[in-house]
Length: 205
Image (tube, rainbow, N blue to C red; front, side):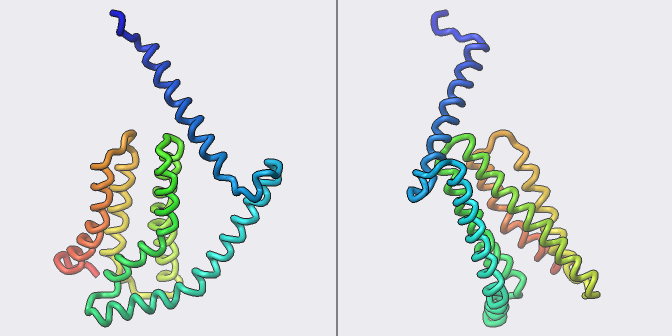
């Protein structure tokens, strides 16, 4: 009876742990302010940080504009020289290059191992997945419609939508484990397998 805890005591202990975790996360986030502006008032710090972020976004946009077209040419040439269709080459290599920033940022947040940073990490990855699969697919379909290009991408579209639904189902789980991460990772080769099956077995274009 001495070691017995009521439900209220258990909830209070859990809340105290969360408060400690959040306070540790907040202290870690405070340390992220660059040293050269740490002596400035908070309002000035925010202004400087926003200006630097905007500058980096502009530089990144310029780099994307400059290197995106050569990157497409390189992937096409890899497909020609290896005899592998360009779609499969780009399906493997393009996400590694285009999503590297989200991956590194999410990994950095996850290393802190607090509930707040883990939530930010998952939100960044899920947001990137939704943006890449829906926004880019909408642009692609718009180009096909307005330019009158022949539709030959049924298998790829079905694969993207299927994987997006599977990832959404996994994201709805309240607790994520290492096994869940391994399963989500397997969705990547599954998408390629779905495209191959639909094109070569089912006969879709």
